[in-house]
Length: 301
Image 1 (cartoon, one colour):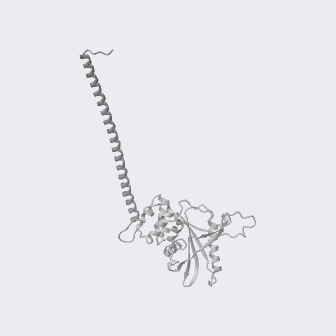
Image 2: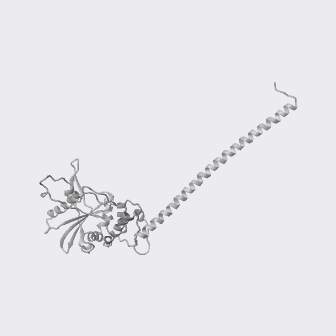
Image 3: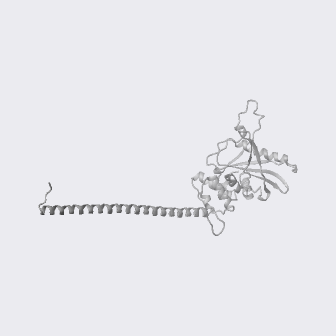
């Protein structure tokens, strides 16, 4: 598993964030899923590559949701920054693996449903298929016999302000960022306190490609819990100071280069002056010699 895949899963793996995402998107903000009712659940699906070798894919995040000792559902989250035209196939593979794991669990006394939702962070609208039947051409006469499988895709950048306010965890800051960037092309950070600072900044760096969030990990905050406004302000100030240092270094280099060029020019002028002086001296000596020869009536043949 690549570092990028690991980083983007860390934030949502926190139960308070996971439950908040499900509650905000599926239950319209109602606190239906409690963080204490969740426990991690690994789901892997298998597929054959072109060369016939068997590969496994692990879904981004999945949790058992249970009330007391009774399993209610298996909930899964998938992150996308770009449209994936194979998303319905991927999701049905993950969900099928989750159902199959229940068959293999001999200790399980009951079966539970599986729900997967896709979090799409792209700035453009999702343009890929949202179901199996949108992906395939079904021969005439088979339409009613081919089961469809719908994918639940939530376009984070297109959530309304009221929908963003339904989130109570760090994911509210994430959603607010993508909505602002899509609508205004810029981001005005809020003063909402960040709980999972390291995980959230790494998540934002991966999902946005903005290295400022990685730089923000080096910022030390004072007082209460850090917020995005404070963090990015300090990052910007660090950037300004770094820019000033770079500019100062460039100016010093330019001055040194200018001084070296001036010294070289002065040396060349001094050398030229010395040559001119020597030439003048030689001409003067020649003139005196000619005068002496003339004085003593010495002539050249």
